[in-house]
Length: 344
Image 1: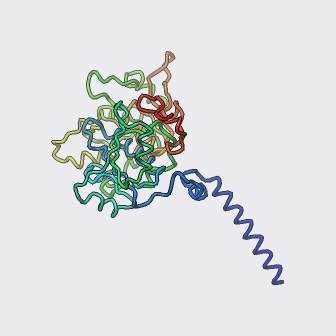
Image 2: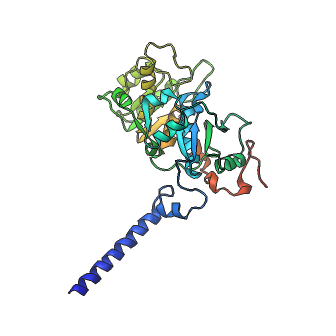
Image 3: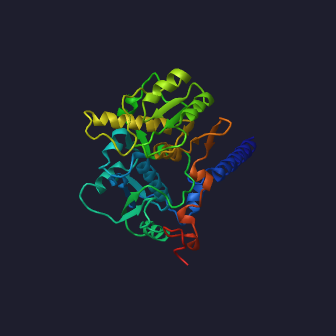
């Protein structure tokens, strides 16, 4: 009988082991233990190799552009075995979020005034680094690099729940979310232009009405034009956070009596998009950055068709198709800022 029990335990263990191996093999590439162990080009992040994100230092860019840059920094760090530290000078970010890991190491790196080699990667600059330079710098022996940018070179796929792997909301942010509204499943972001010359599709009367008639009454409105709160609330039953003033652009009111409160309201709006299951939005980096971080189901509002129906399209990175990771691209596939091969 002892022999029989031993055989039973052996086969049961073997079967479980095979099932575990099968699960590991099928697990997502960024989290697969097997694939990490097999990889020779993308070592696991080490607390001795860092990227300090300094994108907030660009005064001409809004929150959406900046936090899209933080996403790019994390994707590149993940590929090249580095850890991202958000600059201690980005106070607006620290009001709302805290970093989950490597807080002591990141603090120590920024305790003095030392400058580190900088990588610039802005999608509107033609003078930034080429993919060849970026690949070489990130894979170099430089222990610390600064990343000042808002984009990834031809966007790759973002792993699931990516933001949550690195950051969590502060108590200050969570306490600003009205309990009566919470974090809705369906969020609509309507971004009014900054001036008369900033015209955005999907904001005309017919488009707004089609939007209200198409989406469910449980929809939640995020907008920098608080006058729309009343329109969508009374006519379609949509919820909102009831802010008195919302500024999602670079023209933030730095002379506000309670600037921290204003910044937290901004981040609550962004966080509501980050936590949504569906997002519909007009053209805006503010909503697109949250959508991209968490791979949220979303559509861009383009207006109405000739039949008066709502016209919606996919995000640019979904329309264009995602590319291989930078670290996995062949030398002849790497390009400069003009998309010309930079390595023969």
